[in-house]
Length: 111
Image: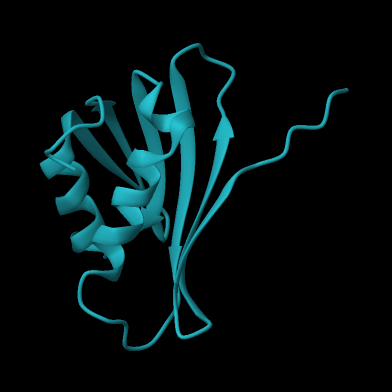
């Protein structure tokens, strides 16, 4: 079985990791999955949106047609940013997380 390196995106400030996202294939052509996580406690304003922007700018996602993202259930900032940058966004609760599916726009001035 082939081993695939899973790209990890980090949002850091002053050496402290604030948020991470891991990307991995889904087995479906044109669809990529990302697990988004933020550290607990107070985070600088916009950290969650920066994480979404970094995920959408990653070449694996930029070249995909659809993104399936797992994110904390109560995180409205990440979901709002996905809705700003993507189309056909659907969100479904899944325990303590939510699954967000969206059609990816190609990179450009919007993000």
